[in-house]
Length: 241
Ligand SMILES: N[C@@H](CCC(=O)N[C@@H](CS)C(=O)NCC(=O)O)C(=O)O
Image (cartoon, rainbow, N blue to C red):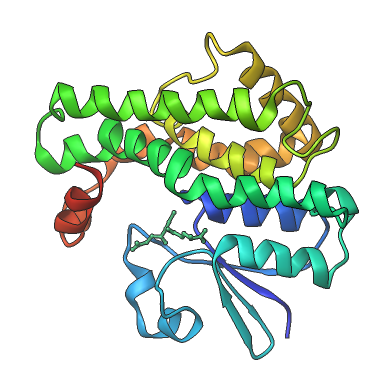
């Protein structure tokens, strides 16, 4: 049975798994899971991942949740080039450091800005309060500064001269607020130059294909029947407002 990846490319960690697998020519069945459609709560998906989040993976009888666990599994199973997840102790530690940090920092902050700018106003029927938006943007700014000043410094990529899992995980999260129409690269030349390097290393076609859906998110939201999100409203407001 071919390796299966359960993905919805609206999701940042799904995009990182997708680009990593594609870039490394890893053969897989793309199992589309519609998160806005609530498919993560269905019986079938529950058998793959009882955490009920995407991405998820099935390799034969072996099921795995969590994007970073999935990518490190794939890196080791398919022995991808060393730069993705370096064997060198300190280089790997640099990658791990970023992967550990990002969940509650840029991931949380970028997601929040996306939801507050694109979907929460539709759910509420009005714009979100200005102070909430200002605080979310300030948090995102703080995370982006740390990426530039702590994680990149003067290196071309987070772990050194070559792209690693840390860069893939970083770029997908940074592209989420971009999908809300916020140009986070404007007036951040270091971040912008790094983004260009990551895009070139992944290949512009793959990068664009993976991000097309999030870059069209505002159009999707305008045409969406917002009732499909009503069931998730309490959870979304608790998370993001
Ligand atoms: N830590 C997890 C996060 C996975 C996650 O939060 N996925 C979101 C989409 S970005 C999801 O499936 N949400 C569906 C839900 O919460 O109902 C990972 O890196 O894989």
